[in-house]
Amino acid sequence: MKESQNKKDQTNPDQQNPTRNKAEKTHPTLWIQGHRSLSLAGKTVVLGVTGSIGAVRVVELARELIRNGAEVHAVMTEAAKHILHPDALHYATGNPVITELGGRVEHVEFCGFRGRADLLLIAPATANTIGKIACGIDDTTVTSFATTALGSDVPVMIVPAMHESMYRHPAVTENIAKLKSWGISIVGPRFEEGVAKIASNEEIVLEVERALGNRSLENRKVIITGGSTAESIDPIRILTNRASGKTGRELALEAYRRGADVTLVHRDRLGFAGIREVFAESAAEMTDAVLSELENGYEVLISSAAIADYTAEPSPEKIKSGGELVLKLKPTRKLIKECRERYPELVIIGFKAETGIGREELLERAATTLEGTKLDMIAANDVGKGGMGTEENELYLLGRGKSEPRHVSGNKRKLAASILEEVPKLLNSRRIL
Image 1 (cartoon, rainbow, N blue to C red):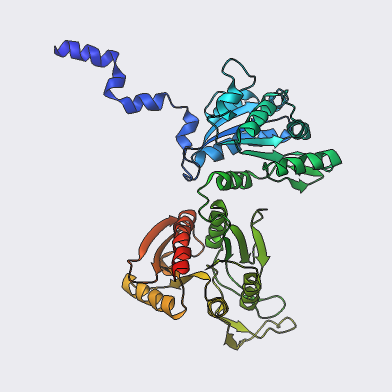
Image 2 (image 1 turned 30 degrees about the vertical axis):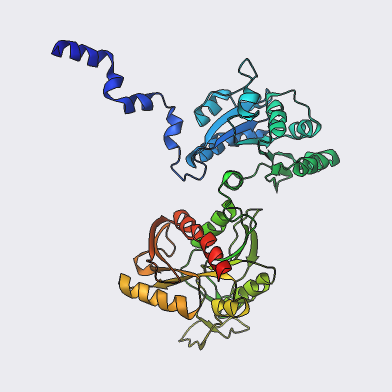
């Protein structure tokens, strides 16, 4: 019996380790699935690749989609195969590449009624392909997928890439306008060196996340402050702090993923077409900029910027070096205080940074600030332990009432998601009040 069992074990090793069997059947590329986030988990993206030189970028694009949880299947035109070998996309996606339509009727399998695809992403899209889609011509694999998707209400996203002179052709301009009128999303292009270049992978993935995400903040207007402010001493020198702006950046990106209309006020540059940016350097400029923006009907303010508490009267000329320099500082205006006074119904989330204190003292100070400034929620942390300028952070989220503070830790994208998960609840609470 024992000998028989040993023989069975040798001939059926998968019965002893089904996990190993599953791993052996998984393409190695899929080992990275979900490593960055799960924003696209459970979503199937068909990546249509056409004959633009921008096709050399899509190997990494496919992998970025997978890192965020997506399942990706690639379909290529004949022209695209002259630029990128199908094996490269097989490697990048972990799935066989569709280069011609056969008995599986792949365009219907993925983009037809009850098809597998959640999105058809055509990146890069040439002027030729854009024109064919606009005119209902499907004489390539990619255009057949597009025709089928549009007839089945499968979302379509197009990322143009061509020479700028081609992009400016009146027919191409009209075709893009027509596609937009059909509800097709157009991402990019970036204009550099006389070329309408394919959008960055980061921007494409962001737009895919917005298209396929939970849309919990759809049609909500959210304004966010981020980073440090800088107070002038003279035309050259400034007083500032160590805030990097990473938290504000991640908050803006996450709000956009969730469908919000987002404005970011800071003294940096994010550079995504979908997010409006307002430059503000000093504390006074940031306060004025936010108050001016709020006149346009925002529902949520997230004040994550490290706004200076003090400012100086700047010298009109460079202060000569050498010897001691004494600066007379005066308090700056309080952005949250002024916003609350003018907009009592606005949902406001603030931040409380302290150093060198224990958890209970941190929470007590945060609660005092929460009530004193009439915030809806506050995020508190001890920046002496990290967080300012770092990739990771640890926060306590306190809301009104006697509920227990929520403790969250991890990278700043995760923290931004935790904060924005609370916003719909805060909006509902405001409505009830």
